[in-house]
Length: 347
Image (cartoon, rainbow, N blue to C red; front, top):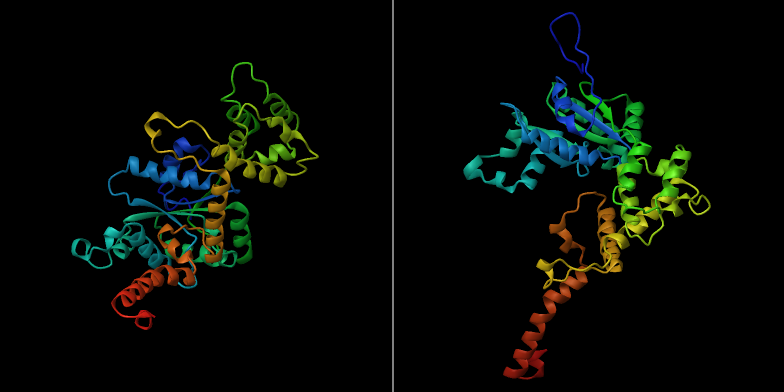
C-alpha cells in the first residue's frame, strides 16, 4: 500500500533513513506522498514539519500542491470532517480567501477538494487523548485514495492508538526521529566554550562513562540539549552539577531543572544594542514567568494548544469589562446632570 503499484518485477525498495537535509527528497520518493513523523517530546517533530514545508515551497516541481502547515489541536473528528476542518482553518489562517469577489464562494473548500494543498498537520498527540484513535481513522478515510498528507505525533501516543483500534494510515510511510547521540550532544554543548575552559569536562566525561544513565537519557532530545546549553551559557555556572545523582535522581528531575533555569538565563539583563538604546526592552524574569503562566492557564482552560492572541480580551472577567466600559460614561452623565441641574438629576 505504501509503495503503490509499480510496473516490473517487484516494488522498489524505499530507504527513508536520513537527516533534515534530504527530508524533502525522501518525502517525494513515497508514491502516495503520505508521511507520519513520530518522536518523543522535544525530539523536533514540529521543526521537521516546518523545514519540510519550507523545503517543498522552495523547489516545487510543476503541478505539485502547495504545502500548508497547520496544528491539529483544534480538530475534533467526531464533530467535523477533515476536509471541512482544513477548509475552515485555511480561511482562518489566510483571511484573503474569504474574499468572494476575487476567489468565489468556498475558496478554501475548493482548494482542499481539488487537491491543491498538502496538509502538513503538526501535533496529532495534542488533540484530546480520547480522540487519537478516531483521528487516525478519520485521517485514513479522508486520504485513503492517495491524497498527500504529513502528520506528526508522539511515538507512544500513536502506537497506543493504533494498537487500541487497529486503525492506521495504510498508505503512509512512517519514520521516527532518533534520539540525539552522545557525541552530537557533547559537540553542541561545548561549541561555544572559550579556549582553556574546562567547566564542561565533568559533564562530558560523565556522559561518555554513563551512556545509559539518567543524564544521557535527559539529553536524548534536541530540546533538552538546547535548554542545557542555555541554562549554563554564563561562564559563572557549573554544568557539572547535573552529574549529582543525589540532587537529580532521575530524568524528570533534570528536565524540570533545565526548564526552571531557562527563563532566568534567556531574560538575563544585558546591554542593549545601539539601535535600541532609546527603546529598553529588558523584561524581569519574574514578570515573564507570570505572563507565560497566565497564557498557559488560559490554554489549559480552553483545552487547546493554539494560542489565539486575538481572543485574549475574553480572558478579562466580565465584571472588569462592565466597569471599564460602563463607569466612564456613567461618571460623564453624572457630571453633566450635576452641572446642568441638581444631584437628583445627576444620580
